[in-house]
Length: 190
Image 1 (cartoon, helix red, strand yellow):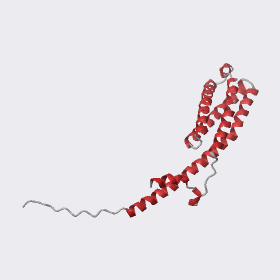
Image 2: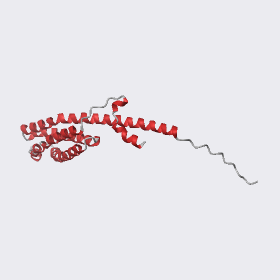
Image 3: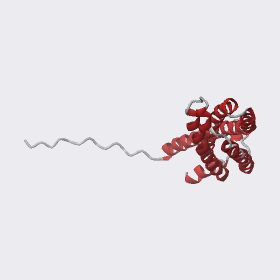
Image 4: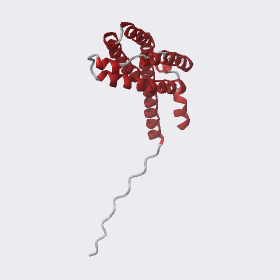
């Protein structure tokens, strides 16, 4: 039975009558994540050009400073998360972590680009917004990959679960049932 469970993930899902999701090959995913990481790296110098401390002096909310510091830190975490997914592209948790971090960074950077337009100069805000927009295609590809990977994992789990249930049924049929134990007599002294 152990050899059967090892073999099951290798069985094509299509043999069970279900269409397999179109999950790209791991080397393609690694390449795409590497390209995304390179795009994200381009955000760091743009972010370094911003001076939200000066914005506060011009009447901007102090929250911009916190957003700017958080975005700088998140870009570092995003880079680490992208490297983890490059090493293990089949890990759904790594892909989800990258996607959510990317989404969070984009929200902060969009806010900062608006602040830059208003309190620093329009060109700095436009540059940052354009760089964030370039990430959108890769982010959408990552979202699609996550969806396909999750679907594939669910299908594989369903196949394994059905086969495990079938094995349990076969084993129950082949395992002899112990004979019912004879009822014990009460041995009371008279």
